[in-house]
Length: 87
Image: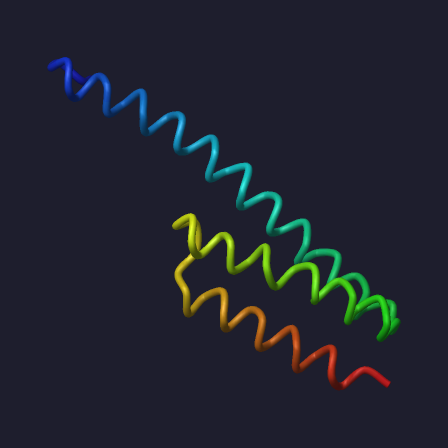
């Protein structure tokens, strides 16, 4: 357990940051799930709309430090290619 005042404060800050990041990750996953569901249903218009909504959320996660830049880019790229193949 933290002993010094500084380490106690860092522990408190880490808890707060963990909760914020957890909420951000959950929000991004929800957007990604909407894209996945639209792809699974075969509705191209809905999939395109969901992807357009998900892209800025993913990139916001990058700027906030929740995801690595390449991870977000990879996810967007793979989703975009799957949406593109829909008829």
